[in-house]
Length: 155
Image 1 (spheres, rainbow, N blue to C red):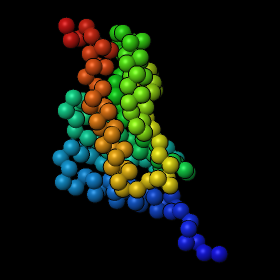
Image 2 (image 1 turned 60 degrees about the horizontal axis):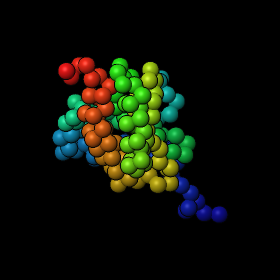
Image 3 (image 1 turned 135 degrees about the vertical axis):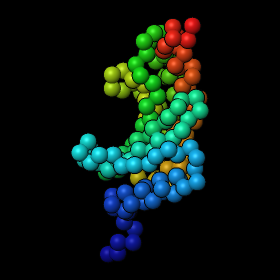
Image 4 (image 1 turned 90 degrees about the vertical axis):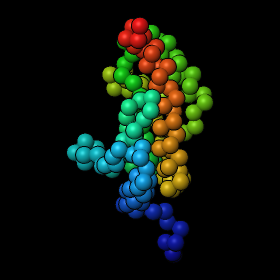
């Protein structure tokens, strides 16, 4: 039996992701840093991509390679101090327009964008789409969510 149709190994995916990310950073002024997560923090390979935003000063996207999926997340906002229910409702209503990601409440009630992609669909173009989409989703949602979550700071 031939192994011609076997999918890439996790090590091959790991090497490909590293190469794609470094290629993505070349000549891209929005990319501030691309680095690996600390192996002590997770048993799975992790990377972060730190981007320079316009509405939000920095956008960091974490990528985690699992057995069958590439998970990704971006921190959007700390836990709202005001209009809590309205902030979460606004984020959930935005979920209807998002492709490949969704708003989620995470650690300490902070707001994140999260998603995952099957490894069978992972390639350089799809990774670029994921990073670009998360960047755009954060940039579009951040100003209104921030003003609602911390309204008294803007008056």
